[in-house]
Length: 193
Image 1 (tube, rainbow, N blue to C red):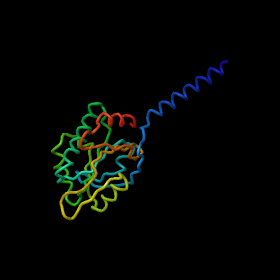
Image 2 (cartoon, one colour):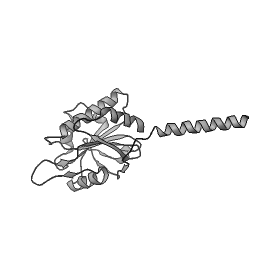
Image 3 (cartoon, helix red, strand yellow):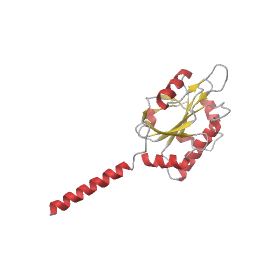
Image 4 (spheres, rainbow, N blue to C red):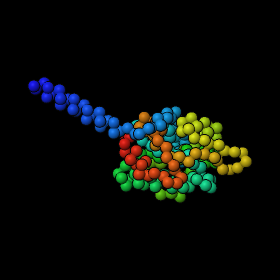
């Protein structure tokens, strides 16, 4: 009888542990791998996947001379960062990849950052690669377009915000321009933390 109770207790604990593990899963995750990278941030420092190991992070693609979608995208990311901070979540990193690296020097990126209410110590604006590199990197890792036509100084690029898990997989993408689902993003980040 004692063995039966012990076995029942162990099975119950196992079921509860498995159920708890299931709540850590997102519904229909993308699970896109991100290749290893090291680029240059707004402080002229090398920053990449090594700095993001075992961290949840949020990413987007922007450029400083953008006249359309980048200002609202950056404002929405800053709002998300501030909302997370109010929730007591301060360990999420933010990464913005410049899609116009020949124009967006670290100095230009730093000047751009100054226009927004953000924690720049947890947000890295990256540059230091070729136009071809960011185009292929965005397509391969984030399944998004980056194209700089020769006829304009504007860059065509995707307008999504991406959440990346601690294993370095893109797990979700959301609109970063309008109707950004802040509560859903925060809930998903809490799930994978």
